[in-house]
Image (cartoon, rainbow, N blue to C red; front, side, top):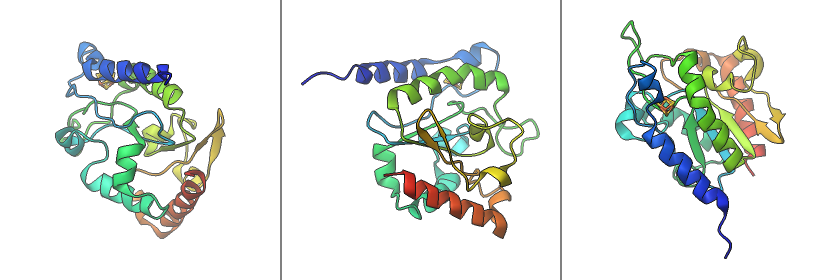
Length: 201
Ligand code: SF4
């Protein structure tokens, strides 16, 4: 059997992520533990914004409340959580818990500089995993594929192709977010779920 060189490349990348202290060295008071999951063979890649405190404590992406709602949405596309977590890829724009916001209400949004420091890992993962469908979740992740001044109402429920991959964005599933709680936006989320259902196979 011929070894797939991507296997060792991805293992090396994961090792570098686990050892990464770039944001600490740049002066950001992050908790240096990269949170992500998945291996080669994944067809779907979910990209979140950054780990929250429950992800930091559990050591897995989209834990607790946000994960519960995300997987409720994905279940409507025929995607089961245990299968997804063990076979597909989950990561985020920045990988380490950024700490509380200055106001103390909620988690800090990673700075542009932190996003840029972490970006090469994501680019390398996309190249190695080669997913057919990318689901960016939340504005920070959606901005990877759309203009920075994007309007969520115009984007959620639509799809686009980049380099042959389908991109289907979802809003942040946090219970604190009011965006997905209006009927018009729930309808947009339902359209996005239908697109994920089409492109997941
Ligand atoms: S967020 Fe990314 S770049 Fe920053 S320390 Fe963690 S792994 Fe490294």
